[in-house]
Image 1 (tube, rainbow, N blue to C red):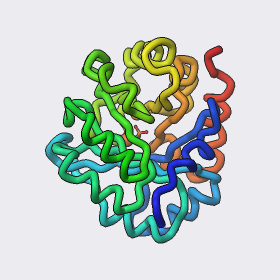
Image 2: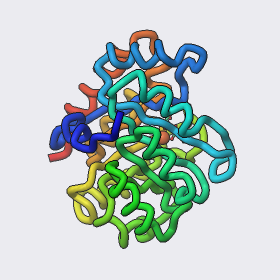
Image 3: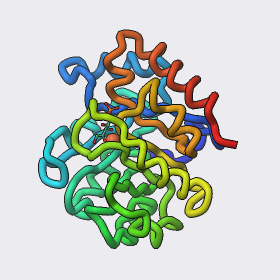
Length: 234
Ligand SMILES: O=C(CO)[C@H](O)[C@H](O)COP(=O)(O)O
Ligand SMILES: [Fe+2]
């Protein structure tokens, strides 16, 4: 299956909040079933957390696994590359069928070429920013991005506590710096935090524990969606 960027628009609508299940807490022994359960729960996309044990102190999976799941589903694939030297690997993620590929500004401080390569490969290009990195590092590249992912935990692990101080970044991006970019927030998003993230301007909400720690994924996702929708900033 080839990447199809227009499906992000279909998935996101204009300003409709979208929940992005993080494929970090799935049952990897039964991955195909997990993907079917998410499809049945009306997930629009899958968020793939790629960790290299170098850029972050944890190791997850890579392009081979994503490519094998690509054969089973047409869901939008949102790859979050928490890896050093992403320029060496981005082509593998394009070939694996990712529809959006996000690299960290801390791993690619001069990302123009990599963003251009992602777009040329037919995918949406995203930049992620860690909680303690100033927004000024992102600013020169915002007009070359389709997505910005604001980390609301230190990247590397699921199940961490949401850092409310990152909401200032979300607000600045939304209101001033990048009002047209799809704003994603990742880490500690759940029923007690999603409303604040939505009110600040996030529209794509990555959630791991808040979905996979609940037995019914559909109920978990619907509740998050409702909380996000009822708190949209004006
Ligand atoms: O990028 C990530 C971690 O680096 C994950 O997407 C994130 O942690 C999701 O998990 P949770 O919702 O449990 O915080
Ligand atoms: Fe992530």
